Image (tube, rainbow, N blue to C red; front, top):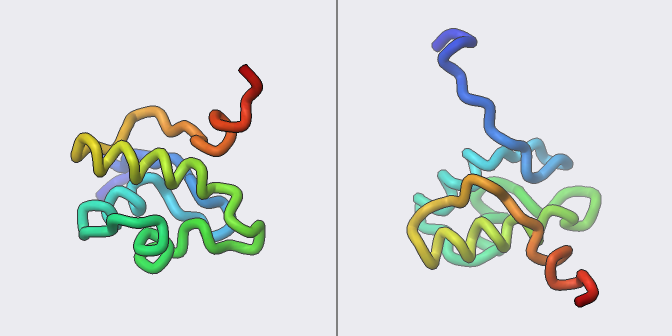
Length: 84
């Protein structure tokens, strides 16, 4: 595959350089919990203590509800903490 055919995938877990595409593969392989995603691709278990877990939760919840990974990745933990 040449560089023109490669599709860039957003990095979700910076500590372990895990991309959205890798997380999608974990979901398609049957991951149904955050722990199963952690085990499958090491996302969310880096030195930072899991600052990407809100994004992982959004991907997981969306996939379980629709069978699709959303285009835009939201950090559910940040959304829930915003004052109303």
